[in-house]
Length: 443
Image (cartoon, rainbow, N blue to C red; front, side, top):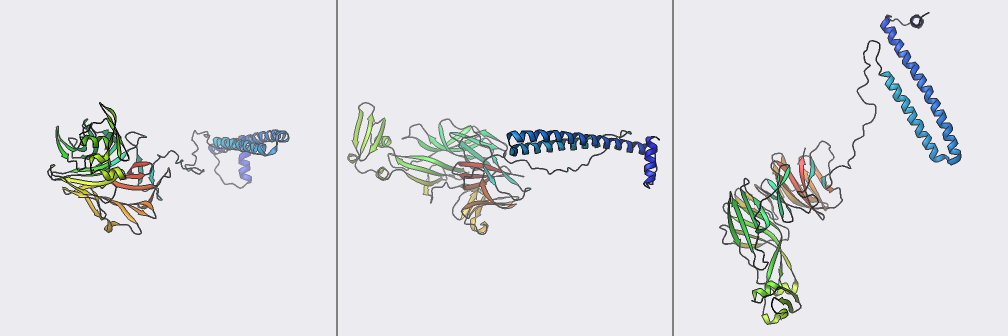
């Protein structure tokens, strides 16, 4: 009796009512062969496992059982997995009609999400909704260097030492500034041909001038801000903001005022290369006479006396002028740089009641989130309002996706923040004890 007859007899005996065709019988034949191969592989795998178990038992006797048992178990699992893989491979063989057997499209294993260890370091915003917008850190124009960021118009300016860069959508471009000027603030106009800068002119610390230079096309125009300090005092500016319109120039700055003994002697007509003040005496080096000592008492009353007694004083001031010739100076209440914005062509100063950006002046009490201790900044776009505020002694952000706590992967606390934009993209500058970080909102 042939194999086909045996199959037909088996189907008849079991009551199967099937139309028997050569193709169907051949399919049964193929599957029977696959099952036979599977049984042989299983028996082979069991034999391998038996050999490994015997070897593992011998090693356990001589070495110890704990580690070897775990090792044997791992080998057995791998052997079993190998047998399963071979079985699955056998199921995907083609039949006699060269028709491939289709495997299931849905995986039977659990997909493990990728690790987040490769995420960029720096500031980040906590998000509970994985589909929400994300704040991503923007690399500094000079990676690794201390960078300070300033918003001006629809862009952000970065300062690294004496270098200044402007953000052009996805890259940084270094600004072409006057070589003779020690720049302390920049205001970008409309188009690359417009540039406004404020800084110190001159290398002599005792005689340098604070000026504002405005470039329109290839022509520069300069305005001098008069020095209102007493003789012998010098200013060291740590931060500044500049805004220039057709009707006004405004400069906000934080500076340290201190007495310089060399400048003090020069203001009194005494030449000195270097000098230091010790008590009531000035020890100086005369370019001709060498080391000389001067008594402060013989100079009579000095307007800089309080700085000699109390040391340097930090202050924040605002100077402004409508024509570039007559300047008015006003002290500011704290030592944090005061933001300046241009709203409808008028220079606006940020204060306790209002937060100011170029084109926006927002009253803090009208947008302050509930339960917040202080509104730090608010910024309006076509998508809605974004706000930085303080709650529970931590900095939070509220945007179109809700409220989120600002955190940092390096665990340094966020101290302050400032909102702005680069073109149509909303950005944010965060300040920590480690420095500043620029973030950009991305979908």
